[in-house]
Amino acid sequence: MMRMGSEYAVGGRTQTASVEYHEPRPISGAPTMPRLHVNIDHIATLRQARRETIPDPVAWGLHCLKAGAHGLTLHLRKDRRHIQDADVTRLLKATDALVNLECSLDPEMMEIALKSGAGAFCLVPENRSEITTEGGLDVIAERARLLEAVPALTERGGLVSLFVDPDIDQLDGAREVGAPFVELHTGSYANASGGEREAELERLLRATEHATSIGLRVNAGHGLDHGNVSPVAALPHMEELNIGFALVARAVTHGLEESITSMLHLMDAAGSS
Ligand code: PXP
Image (cartoon, rainbow, N blue to C red; front, side, top):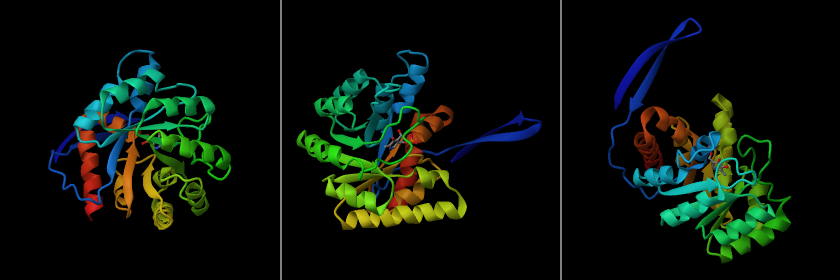
């Protein structure tokens, strides 16, 4: 590991900006290591801030795959605030890696998802005023729409997951509508600290155990970063982590390759422990 530091002043106090670079090293590839899916929406957010053509989220995604990421995730929102329809088409043409399309149950989004040819779909709730997806899908309230959406997407050959809070009744609901996967919302874990974070981790563990006991496969994501990923990556039966913002944020200061490879190493170490 190489360290670089520089001093700067904030509000009369001197701070040190310290940057740690992880040297590339082989990944053990333990079978228990979850796969890393990079969420590319945040690059599209930057592009849309100027309504520009750069930075290109598709190119970013391909670089992430080259750096070792296992798959890519993108969320086509109804308000098209970041990912655009053409991004979905371009990405699916550009790679054979697993592309996970996140979308809401809105009829327009479902029509696009069904025609897209994506290999995986994650169904999420969507509120217009939210900055990012705030809570899990209420699988119980959405039961009727899910009973149509899950088999329709599965028939198109997609792996369907439901983005849910780590609550037992939501997991039971996901099973009842026939979803093979859930993606556990890790936002409450990521936002908590100290004892509260321990409790949220325990909640994720109980959810993972319950999900696998009723035949669900388990992914997770939201708010994960290089500092908090390890305990989640170490959860038994965790198959895939979807991470976006932290990877982009770290790439700004450390470079894309370091951001991806250091995350992979953390997940690898946690998965093999
Ligand atoms: N999973 C889902 C369902 C999401 O909506 C998001 C946010 O776009 C993520 C994972 C990734 O979250 P983050 O950008 O905080 O890593």
